[in-house]
Image (cartoon, rainbow, N blue to C red; front, side, top):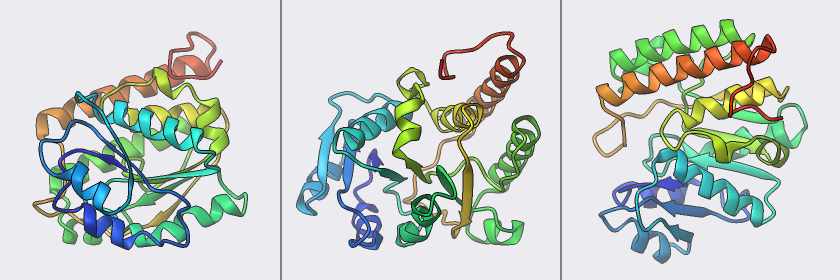
Length: 237
């Protein structure tokens, strides 16, 4: 769980995680200014604290290194802001356990009506649809959403991909998927409820625009790498 100021939602997220599924739960706090760390420790969660904020991508890098060092064979990321239904963890990882996919995504976009009814702002829904459609076209995939914070990885994915070279910002989520597709890993998805509410974390409009532009740049790098013109830093050698 990559955490930042999640004191209001951490308990609920943790309580929903099926305890018979997770061998170990790791939380990395990215310099929170609230009681996230103390709550995590009271819950018995293995907690690591960044003394300074390293960014969303930088937080994930630490999460994955800790999980790999602990010997994890499947690594699940869920935001501790209760925006995603962590009770669906068993369903998320089952296709990986059955060797059908290497990465699984929890998609909030089953239908437009459900996404908007769940509180997703219209501009975010439209941006999500635009980027996802473009990504499907460029990457040759057919997914309903690439922009979810609930996902699972087979260990081999994280071992092979150079995620330590990815961005420390929000576009990390897209760089790791684009790099994985380039490397030939298989991606599947399951539908999950959409939850937007005041306590759930969400980037503002300006940072959303930056995230969108950086996603487009990553797609352009994928095109160049696929054409053997230039292989950028996000692709495995």
